[in-house]
Image (cartoon, rainbow, N blue to C red):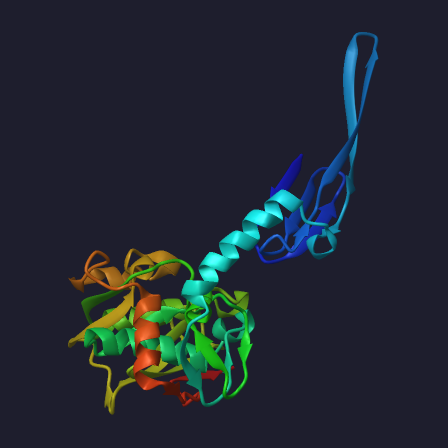
Length: 283
């Protein structure tokens, strides 16, 4: 009768006379209590129940915080700030991690993350899912990057892993990455060490047109060392192709992705990454 949904990134309410349905956006920005007005009638020994919903929409930004809870939050923020509000570098150009960017096109911040994963582990290429980049934020040119920024971008604690797979498996993984483009799915790939052309007008499973590794075409029969994250290695976001080879660095041996990225930025001091044509989409 009533469906209460969350983590869908939408703010929606609906009632069609049968089912009441609400989605509550993200990060508790909104709450949607549903009050049910229920009428129970008994006539001639027969019991009937009628109901209708009343939706209430609460913007939590306008809610006065509970004083005791706020006190605890402030204490935790102070402790975390000492560890997280630490400068690790700057960005020469703008970076954009907004949801609609990292799930639909090559993003400079996706390039940085993939480059860091590849460089830290000596892999030939790196593939990570755009949906794992979460801060939904724009950084202006010259912005200071902190530990907090990177951990906000990569909040899941995923480890960087390296697997050795065939070129055909790499191709299949990329096909999966473009398979739900129209839905803005998190499987959209951010890559390093390769250039891929995809034609989104073609059927799912036939969208990858070409893949270059360095200056050479991807060889379906050759093997490549691929850096990715443990979620994807285990088939997350449909990336089953990544689990078809030999794991060289597993989740227990690999560093946390965020650590690889922080180390990469600290070593560079200033990152100057621009969108450079790693992913070309034909639409």
